[in-house]
Image (cartoon, rainbow over all chains, first blue to last red):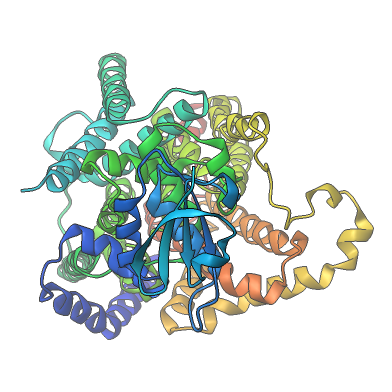
Length: 139
Length: 473
């Protein structure tokens, strides 16, 4: 009796597999044809759904690794939750120290927010990308 | 060949080497040709052991990094080899039996599908974009990046990202990959995750090889791999499916211990359950229930000879150092979304009983609402459990009670939470609850195999017990 049940189960399994396998194999086959990408692009591209990835790279280049920075996120219509944008920058800019207090930061990133409204005096303003700037605060 | 390729290759060699040494130490492997069957288990066990030890090392303040990983791996290999010299070689490879042509076709088809699906998953993990789940971006990856850079647990940083009470194993595992490839490269992680998933599938094949015929195991795993949610999550950076791998292989090891009473299976289960505890709180929940159920079943079946199984209690206790670290570093120790302080208040629980009934109904209905494969898997798993119960009652009861209590335990999580229940279930029930479906499904060929080995009317769960009874005058 158990053997019959086992045989029925195996038959059901193979029939179900036959009905479902094609789409997954097709996906694998189509992906195999895609050109290889640079690792840096592959790391960053998926994040473009949430924020402009060029800004991550530019901020990484401009803010020294031992610096403290803050970030002020403004409203950008149709964009991701500001908290996610902030967390992405924080993740990407490690080991740079993030602070919530703009007054304590050496650099402040203004994300879709005018630099003049940050409430700090700065010596330099550098564009990181459309709508994104970083200011170096007066020491 | 880049530094990243070399790093991935070194990581990919180190993990099975560590795992195989542990299996050697436990007396399950002996560097013979048949050990190829244990390659998947070696990889998974090596990953779990190294990630658990690294997590505990970080918790007590030992810095992580490539040197620490290599030293820990070397220590595990040496311990395994030394222990293996003292362990009797009691684990025979599966016996070769002549196959019925239909059985050979079923096993061949199952194996071919598994191979094709595994290759397709590997291709997708390399070529397609990594999946940016919100929890991955807000919790798991930033912490992994922080560990990779600082080689320690930075309490301030840890507490500033989502759900700091979650244990550190998943970020530690990702940070180790970053250490090997020489930088923060999240795009290589899906490949690592897919390798872990394939190791899990191979581990099931290896573990079941002596208890269930391949014509049962391979088509079963082929169906699991073809199920879209399982296949897509092979490359997911959320640790939910990883947790399923750990718990399911631990459960299989526990069933094998109930059947054979070989202490080595307890060692395998201990390592995997410890890793599950340090991966997610669901690992602690499902793992603790498994330990209690296996202990009860063990004492029923094996009487005092089940005493060594108490070692499994160490696995849930692995959460204590983590809770202590959170408390001493003034990081939030539990989610404010759960009313853990009011669990002893009957009035509080009664007031929100509708959340429990809604969660139970939702979770029972869920497998039958999507594509048909999940419903087929649930129904067949249930049928197998009922069918084998007369021949292996204690093992079937243990598996059924573990799955049932875990299901109720998960529903209770939704019961005591403050979050809007429908939204909470919608976001989490699928990826957390599928652990139980994978477990039920992967255990089915094992249960069938064990039951088929018993002759009809024979109900003893333990061959050793059976022998003892028969030899008594």
